[in-house]
Length: 174
Image (tube, rainbow, N blue to C red):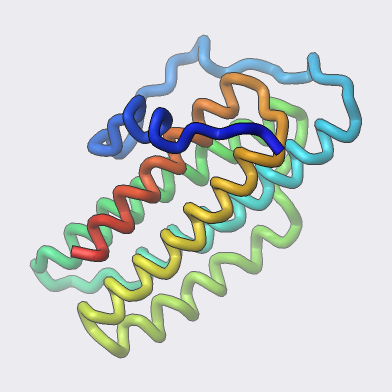
């Protein structure tokens, strides 16, 4: 297990930024790691995060209605942020020469099911689902940050996305 400073990560990431800029030079091929055990852990971690973020996108997307409400605005912002996370992890997978898991096609369905159930309970259901999904995400991020020896660039992306999830919990708890 790696020692992990949650407070420091939260202080050094601006969660008001929904979609951080990515420059062309930020995209790098990451084939320099040769330790097979470490690579396996990184791959499994990235695929897990990609799958869970795909589910979260759909959990928010399928709750959005055509109404002009603050809830819909918040759902759209959360969906956009989660879409950014999906892209972050998909890019990292490709940088390593991997692809998303074959199971990634299952997670949008789970998100749809969650959204459909939450929608039946209106705003309370949306907020409950937001807190539930984001709390699970925070726990997954914490575990993966503590147990996997990430490269520095990938770790920074994961930390930023993890901090976003704390912000989502705060949003849906209010």
